[in-house]
Image 1 (cartoon, rainbow, N blue to C red):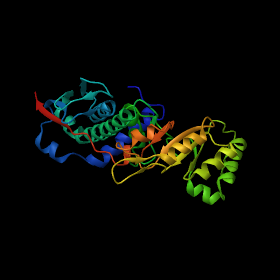
Image 2: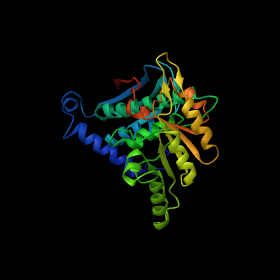
Image 3: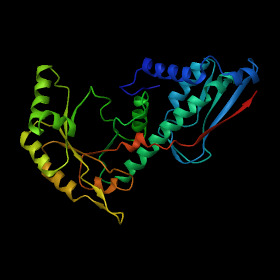
Image 4: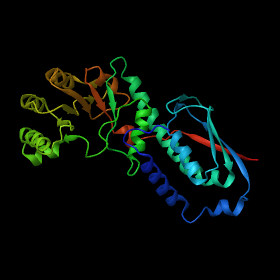
Length: 298
């Protein structure tokens, strides 16, 4: 299993252990009461709706955490597009272990697949312009790295993992710092004083005047163009302000659009030439992919 660079094996095991403690507690009383300890089983996992499969490696780890004798035989790989009824894979092993692990494994598989599917839809909708589709920090607490891995498997690009790996100056930072220029000055000073030349500096702008101020300063690596695209009542998208902002920035630095980003608006936003588009909806409003597990006993 190849993990993304921000997720270690130990961190993944910790998520699984905490989640199993939450679900199983001192024991699965239903399974213990009804299933003999020596009974062997086989479970088939199928997609019930079309989508992108993601999280197979995590689901397998859940099953083997519960019982090391479990064997997962996947018919597809993470990132594969599947149709309704397609067999994703089968799991064989002690029946009790399969039943104990079932809900957590499916919860993770369904959530990650839902995120990957939404990401793929958004990536496809931006063609032929193909800006980076970015995730945000609007993730499920405790599951951020899995949420971001799902975006990656769906063809998206991961933005910052947390507050520690990118300086992102937003509107409240600008207000607290006293304006765009002092905020950028302070960010540059911080990087120099702490030897953090590895940190990119991104700053949020909401008006064309703020964009001009950032360009005049010259201290940003990325300009975030926030809420510069708006949906009209007739369903069309007004991107005139965003187009002007992208034109103003030119080759000074990278641009990222955010706000009002949906599957319906992302195509028009991409057509402005922006380098990246971030969407919190990929993870905060995910619809889990409907995936089932059906078990038989040997």
